[in-house]
Length: 251
Image (cartoon, rainbow, N blue to C red; front, side, top):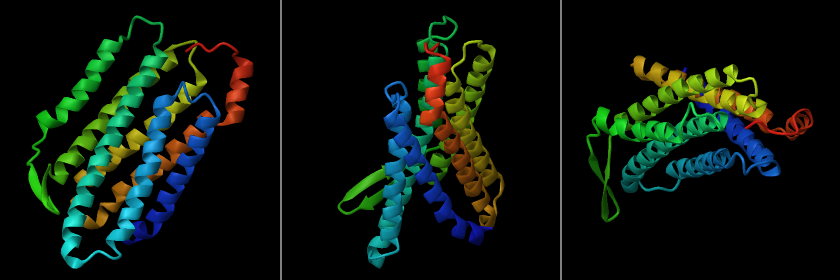
């Protein structure tokens, strides 16, 4: 399975970046001011993917053997730090979508949603052992938690995001004036966070190194499907039809 994923991974990653670029183009050409947080997230994902791809090429290129170990360790820490930040970004996006879907309603307050975000920030530090280690980067020594802490935090954030997205969907389905675009955006994001949560669960349960690629494959496929739904959500023709059918937005 690992060999199959090594062959498929570059194609999957190129597909993910390509679809995100399309989403970015559709956002910029449309009402991106309404979905400014989605725009920021898409830009972050594209830049991070390209940066880590270039860094990965450098790893297997001109780095000396002495610097390779330090660079590899720093790369791993930066990779997992970005992974946690992306997962936190997705969690916040779902909170923002809940707020948008509840605009004008007294049932959901910004204070409650803000408290949930604060809890998501604090819980990983309270629940998981960080086991801080110092790594040397040139003349500096930088503190970093272990990879296990990053993985546990990402798993927690994605499971939490999947639950919050379920709450969002419950609210959208119960509303008679739901915005079709928010429905599609939440559907795409829900597919991504649910698939990522499942991927971390699979990788956590399967101890054999050979089968950890299964988790990555689930993660990549869920991202492909989720971002395709976002393409549909921000597709210019779809927005034009929506404007014709409903000149006044309900959200």
